[in-house]
Length: 260
Image 1 (cartoon, rainbow, N blue to C red):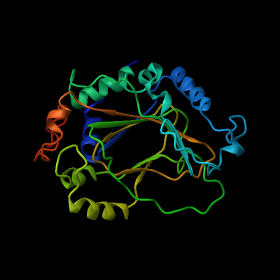
Image 2 (tube, rainbow, N blue to C red; image 1 turned 45 degrees about the horizontal axis):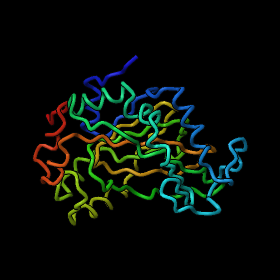
Image 3 (tube, one colour; image 1 turned 135 degrees about the vertical axis):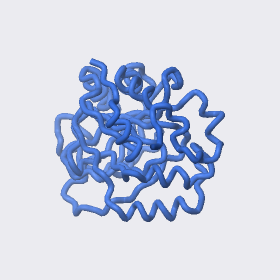
Image 4 (cartoon, rainbow, N blue to C red; image 1 turned 30 degrees about the horizontal axis):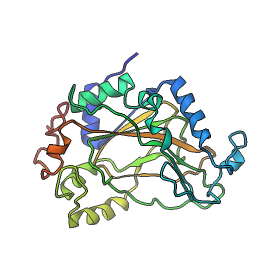
């Protein structure tokens, strides 16, 4: 059954810059995505032997479509396959909720997602401090992360700094392009000294996030490979609006949100 955002969801997203929704993704398509991930796995990883999942990678791969380095594995190759598009942005609930925020009929039709982004388990290592937050460089409006397998607490989740979108939005010369002012780095260091929110969850859960929220991929101290899929929603008018300066009303382009 299709899910929608209620008023409380929209207010939470407005105030915090992110929103978690549970059990949204299609189980059959998730299973297909997990199988597809292992199609591209390096020989080091044996799907049937979790002890081999512990990083780091013994050899790095600079292949952009199947990049492996240290503990990160970004498998972008399947991102253009139709079942992956159907799994995330064209999931009826996800598409409908994005239109609630940005406007019905305003979204660019997707032809791919970013891919499957993984973090290997760290194994028996001393826990590290957070690497801090950053804001993505490319122009878009609304991000969505989906988990195709369970992500435990401290298991490599998508981590956010709630409310930071309200500061970072004004730390750029334009609304959507990567044109930071000097204040961006000042505020980035300030937020990075604060604890982020660990958005852990189960297979099927998603996280919506504002394009200017501070975020990171957190450390993975679990025994699972963190498996996430990502997509960036953009509106059809992005080419005309992305170079405009930040608006006094940062929600001007979000028809479902009022800043009151």
